[in-house]
Image (cartoon, rainbow, N blue to C red):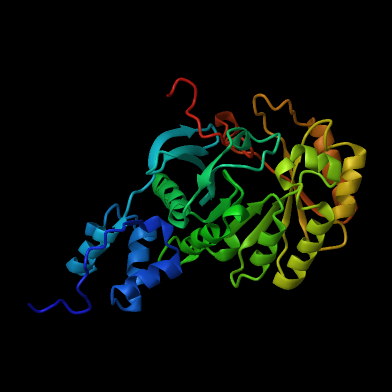
Length: 358
């Protein structure tokens, strides 16, 4: 019997794979192994991460035999939304269940005609930052490239608009899941995916130096943010125990090298914790760390997390810290928190239903 043009016989393989585990190169290789031309991979990518097809059957511009062959080899299961919470400022927090029962959270933050999606790269986190809800629940597993891209795409669909920005600032340490994180970024950046500009895609790390050095060499203009939170080694080791293997001196060297090599300015995130890292000595150390090279300090008044024993400084002290940095010639801003009334702000994601739900 004549075969459809552009198709090949697709013998069923006993080993099935989650399609979300493939990055762009993996997707291209899988289609090539099936004897397909290169453009088929772009078509499948568009269906998966642009149009959000829930099954291979809906990929109607693929030959029927290819759709069946893909279904024989790959599982395609979107995250299922378990809960959506809506904040007074329009922010929405999503609790997703993945196919293996693991749950993660992501956040949609609208501002005018823009939508920023904060997504997770791991289920839980092993870094153990004392002021963060995510680390208190421990680490479950790394997320797959497609699981990251789907978080952003599904949030955007719920808002009825495209995401203008996406930030890997949800649960997890992205650079401890480096390959999958880059795979997710590239799906989000792809014209056939979410088509978000590279400079509007940000990765936040606790300071994993090998990841920073790899990230500097990537060809895309992705943006880097580093959770610093103290420039005093003893304080940082106490509040960020998972990062103590990467000392501050080595971290600064890596960041200075990053700006020189990549030509991009990283952001230093600094969660202000009353009585811990907002003292005059702590801020003097922050000035010393940030002065003299290309960076931006983003001050984040710490958000309330039950059981952490942390509190934010008063508004006067926050303004004083910002003024000290600016007077030292360091570009600084104070983050306007969004979604704190639904525990959707920085450090508050904990993979739990709201009270009374589950």
